[in-house]
Length: 581
Image 1 (cartoon, rainbow, N blue to C red):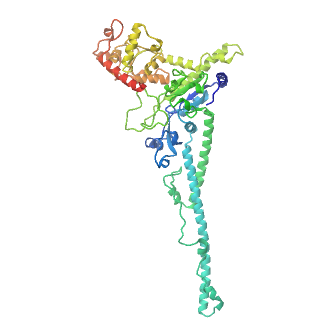
Image 2: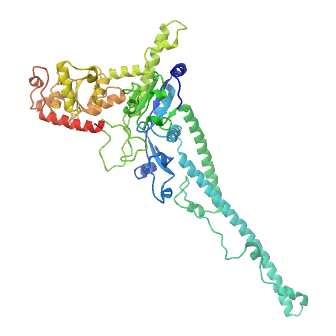
Image 3: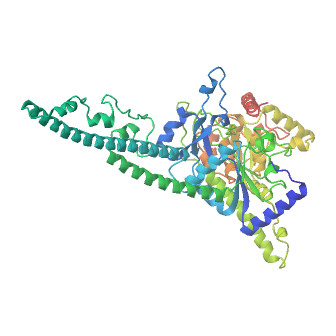
């Protein structure tokens, strides 16, 4: 980690800001795991999908970087694998997202993984952007197949040369044996000179013995495992039964394919350099911060006034010693999971508070065809960029020529994001049912009645309540006639029944609020209606409960039932488990 003084950091920040403004760009910091990809080394759950899908890629990584327990004992060295194959599922729309963001933002990566992991994942993303079908491990396998073909071809060529030599030797041997037969016939007729006796005593050796050695000595054939195949589905045993001409043809095809793949790999490297450059921060680079801490100051020493951060976890940014709360730069995304029950290679994801993700415990993967998160995030970042530079153009047109460019930007990116969030649910009045612990609600009501609410107490401490306030909504502690939403965990609670008696009040699931947060748009309530989806009038006719007006006491608060208390108690237990309290 490079340490610089505050003055140096300020000067660097100013230079970067000027450079980005000249390019009409902003800074974008991307998380990898559960944001852009889902990675695992769990072959049992991942390998079947890798065989069937093009958006599941592979990469070999050292086992020591993957949190694999180190074996102990006398055979520990043999038990410890050097590398593990990782399966990387790309999030839907990630290619479209990166292509668009590269035009508007200077992209950086900040990951809890190692530096090698970050470099390999960015390489996989770059290959996907140019539709390269093979990853590094596939290329290595293709190269291995080529080398094996070369070995077999060399072996068969040698066998061919030996056979040719053997045939020549046999031909010479046949000619020599013919001369000896003529001598034997002449000897029987008494026409052989005595000086030929020595020739008859010579041992009966052939040219074949002198050339190729003993006929019993057989050349050992090279055997290969049938587990490794080339890119055309040919196993090594198939190669062995091919003729020399067939092997040479196959090698030509393989070399042509390998040349194409290596060309694509060079293009992918160029794409990675153009999009990510050397702007990668990993746990290897900031090991002193710990596994669950990301610091905005490490990336932008002066606060990142032109930066947006995209991550599935907000707590890691708030855990830094120099950050008391989550920076407003952080744009949250829904945690991405594809391989159900698979081991995560780095830190765990955030909790999906929408309650989605499926409950099928027999499945090994989730259907992610409806995942539109990166399209939502793309829209958010486009709006941020448009607002930032639209304001500067307006200021530039009304300012004097030669004015300082830094004064043309009225609002920083964090300020723009804060404003955009408040616009989402501005004018909405909502209440939670079964989602906020009862003791928190009671303490808040007492403080409001006594007028002793402090600044810290007024700040929502539970995620859903805090998100609603961040999005511009007013969170009510009692049922009010102007209520617009009841965000409930389950149907049939006192608040839900009373809410159905309020004209224009939507009874929605918590997923509605989370999607509003993840997209920074007001999502359609009809897609998240709790219950059977009947309108308020129909529900109020079926309800046997008293109207809200009859249940409101003189202080303006509604009485809570035992059912509601039980509901909030369950919520308190669940929230305690999520927050670790």
